[in-house]
Amino acid sequence: MRAIYDVSIARPFLRVLSIGLSLGAAACSSKDSSQAGSSAPPAPKAGVAQPQKRDLTDYEEFNGWLEANHTVEVRSRVRGHIRKVHFTDGQMVEKGQILFELDPRPFVTDIETAKDTLKIYEAQKVAAEKEQARLKELLGKGGASERQVEKAEADVKSLDARISASGNEVKRLELDLEYSKIRADVAGRVSQARLTEGNLVNAGGSDPLLTTIVSVDPIRLYFNIDERSLLRYARNAGAQGRSATQILSQLKDEKSPFTFSRDGEKEFVHQGTIAFGDNRIDPTTGTLQIYGTVANKEGKYIPGARVRVRVPIGKPYPAVLIPDTAILADQDQRYVLIAAEEKEADAGAKTGPKTTVRRRNVLLGTLADDGMRAIQPADKLSEGEKTEGWWVLVDSLQRVRVNYPVEPQKPGEAAPAGKTGG
Image (tube, rainbow, N blue to C red):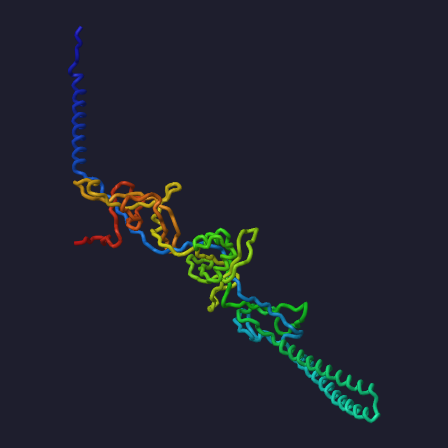
């Protein structure tokens, strides 16, 4: 049986198929034309900089605090009523300056009484000496006995002792009068007056605290250093085998410097020198206490303030540094990206040399105050390659890819917008 097809029914389907094939051919032609006329996207721009060579010193940081070199509690040595306070609270005072003055009248009266007693004994001694001379003369004539002469001599010696004691009593009372003017034993800053005019001051076991004085210049800076840091210092300084106390003694004798920052400061701009190290390690903390002296002529350092201390560990050494922000992390590995100029043979003779992003693993060292980080290559470098010769990518790190081209912007090469060189 022969199949009979209706041409009128098949004709619309053939027309749709023809249109579809035409559109597909046109699209392919347009895509090929677009690909032929377009070029590869330009390489991203990124700032680069070469590492810096600088001498660095390793250091350790510790928490510390400031203390006055001398702290004096001012108390009265004698009993009396406060007549006048000669300072204002918080004032700077000089050594020997009068701080409190007690009522001097009782002391003056006691001195005068003691002097009168001294005069009485001196007058009695004159009479006793005359009696002694008279009895000695009568003894030769038989008018006096040996016993009478000996008693006269004893009376003279007794009065000599009383005169000496009375003279010492006068000196003691004069000293009390001097003590009635309470002076500063050290120069420094005085605290507030605990007692004011009209108050009775008792001397002895119940003597009250009148005020305190703390010395200002120099001031001490205390901190605790662990034995591990001391041994590390000894190793870097070539003093292995020495004990912690011997190392501290060396630091003290050499007046080793240190720097510190106050609370709220980021830079270690203040300086001091090590002056003391304890003679034993605290078994509870494993540390030794150290203090250094800091010049404080302007009085800007206050006792009790907390500080952060930085102590050099070892001697200066040459190092290569890059901005810390240029260092990237890949799990436990640190690395940097560098702009490496490929050789013409590698890049292709038609295109010429090009600059490609390469990865270099690094080991981290000390972080300097200016944000520069010391680095060392973690892998063996190729022949002729040097760390200080790297052009390290320092910005636009998220826009570049390893082993892809990059357009490095070296320092001073970026032209202002709208201008070109020529």
